[in-house]
Image (cartoon, rainbow, N blue to C red; front, side, top):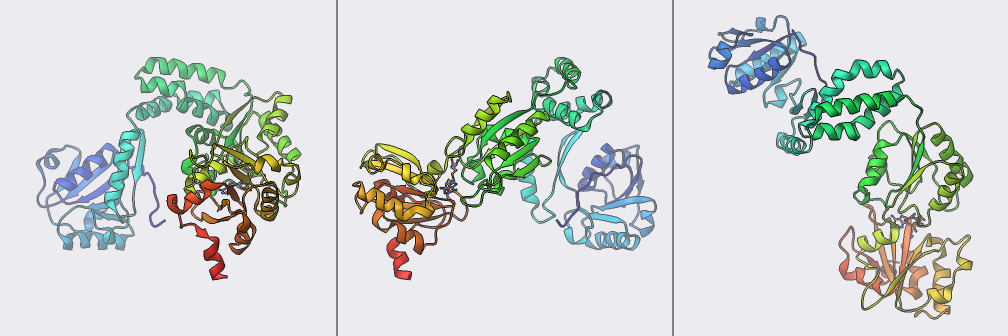
Length: 468
Ligand code: SAH
């Protein structure tokens, strides 16, 4: 970060402004709003500047003496020599200077702002792309409507009473969150301040009764954060603590409330870091502390995610819960590899199958899985590609059936390998495919050749073999 962001209290502080035109006038208006005492230096000044009672105007050339007593200076002249003189005088005194629109002469920059006083949003691109900052400001202007300012004003008026009523910081934080996301904010948006105020009072009275913790089981999707649902995003932003799997992408975790505790209970095929029993206990402990617990799982929590078992455990212990579905790997990999999982000409059904080489492969009903005109989406199959091929072929699926291996589906490092069922194991080995990867078996897999649109083009087994 090149510039340090800060909001300065300028009340009754002297600020020097050099320049007397329209730009200077804009800066002075803002400074006066913030309660600063402005000393203005310029031979020529606009009528507004000249006549404003609380500006001290020096109608003369800039002199370093003008810096006397000022906390910082803004140079807003179109005379490069004057701007440089102000910058030099500032450096000599170790005082901050902003030369409007000249980053190399400035030791601070004035951000673009969205003003919903007392809520103020400052935006800066570090002087690199003011146009971009303006664009961001416009977006925020439309997103953060005037009610945010009113809400902030309401909270400001109630601050003392809220603090008195809820001495505990955590209780206070929870209270504020209920207010800004709930009924009070809605009433302010509807412009019904009196009712908003009554609702605030009611919420405050109820706030110190101990809270019942709850667990939200959330599907984090396959990796691309854009695939989260709005409910998932809200749960992440309201969480006190997040227990997440290793599969969950950083991109998704970065959307969580910053001061939520994060516990990685990552389970990877093979290396079990935290046992299921321990995960259940952690969920219970956290919920019993009255916290909002998010249990965040890759993909969808009910598809090969043991979400069901966790909920059964919570249900036994009387902990309330909710479920937010996520986009499961098969759906995401199909979409991001250009493989429609069903297709009128090729597949009337799709089956999600766990092909974990350790425990489940032996129990699968291979005879049904080998039927034609269906698509198989095999989860956790990377270590068992040979078994998948052998069993399906033995039970009658054609060795020439197209297959695709989608590694890191929807992520920036997605890879898609296309082969036939007969070539599945060799192709996986030649490409050194690693978990997480999904195997798609069926005629539809071949469509990736022409329908792929995301990331690098699929590689075929032929191409891999030519390289090897
Ligand atoms: N609940 C998850 C599945 C957990 S099992 C879901 O609904 O997606 C873990 C397996 O999911 C991995 O071994 C892999 O087969 C698959 N998987 C998860 N994320 C994936 C991704 N981004 N790309 C490819 N496969 C993925």
